[in-house]
Image (cartoon, rainbow, N blue to C red; front, side, top):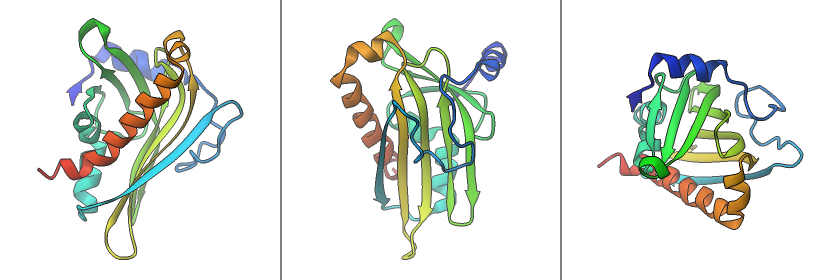
Length: 179
């Protein structure tokens, strides 16, 4: 993760979310606003170190390992802002978000971020690590969204395919970070 410049941090923290949060409590991405499409995908991880997996997730390493370029105000904590890039150079897609909820409970860690102006979609995405009863870890990515830009609307089915691909990459990243 590269740090965001101070001007970008101020600008992104002041920017409004591009959607209305239906329930601002952590872990509530299952409540889908009208007009949004939702999904939840989970995977049981090979790694079993909740603290290490959470450190990777909160330091944006999961996003980086998924193939995104990340500039952030700091770790994924309350109010943190991030500008993610998908693609290379001037053709890359800018993906600005703000962390809107953090889960830090025994056996559960993660965060949700919401979209900011300039993001191709409108909505929220949650990344949650949970300790299973057998001691293993489950990693879940949940989101609700709708197109928020001409690019996303014009992309039609391709937009959904990119979202499914990135979700699969997120889900594989914690184990890939083990080496």
